[in-house]
Image 1 (cartoon, one colour):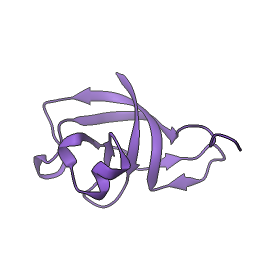
Image 2 (cartoon, rainbow, N blue to C red):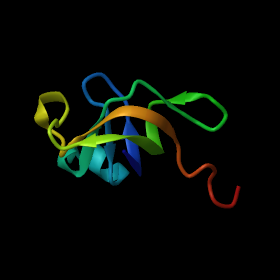
Image 3 (cartoon, helix red, strand yellow):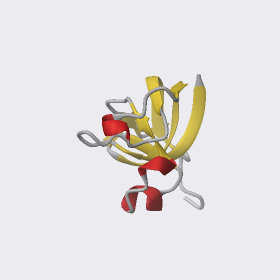
Length: 90
């Protein structure tokens, strides 16, 4: 089991968590992990499809997600919540 934070993007055949938003925007999938999750939630309970999040799940290097493009996979996701809980200064 691991707990990681990073930029999450949830889309058809493209669920991933990346070190930085730029890694997602420039298609640097090896700087991320396939994310076997169906949804992430903000602290008010609303769902979101991309943004920084804290993810808890089981890491495996034996699988690399869709078409083997990622460096590993987070399976059995227990939690995917917006991170940080609120923006600084708000």
